[in-house]
Image 1 (tube, rainbow, N blue to C red):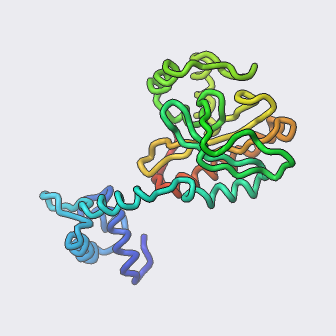
Image 2: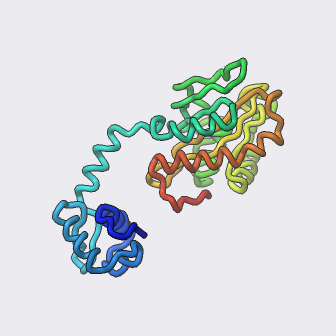
Image 3: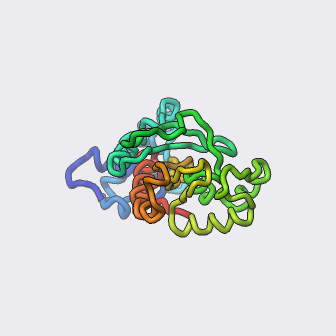
Length: 254
């Protein structure tokens, strides 16, 4: 619903509604705007090529939306869009905060905020990370179809980096069931000895998993119970990052 009397709000509400609704009656119901006003706005959107008639008495998004979206995406920087939510997470927890996006069968750090500790994590922006050994990676894998996870495992062997690393496909699938159920993943000294992380998946404007965010610190500074207590903070921050990247507000995890 839009604010009474705001013509700009009404126009934007109608523009957003035609992504899912085509009939004037449905658009009016979704926005709370009268059918006569919806019709008038749609005519203006058609004139500007932001909407077009579908030939069956309805309306659909117009070509100018795609043109505008294309121009925006060429300048789109995920790290910059996510900066606010990452900073809030960092300030609340005090731990090193990471943002990584998928790159083929790995993920790559695109942002890192050092924690308020007298030491630094060995990670760096531009560094690639394995999916089966890290909190971000496992959170990402949990959002993929089983067939895709199997394909990734067939191309990238589950190398054991520490005694805690998951090294079999069967164990990984069992673990991903847990990750999906709880909405976050934990790296319990699985990637680097002595380091624990908790991470959650991040989604893009299409609703597909893009990568993930995490907080990391030395195991001696983060007991397992503390890690789980902080998980809701990471899940909430991941949702904020996803929304900043244009993910649907109705997004639900697998």
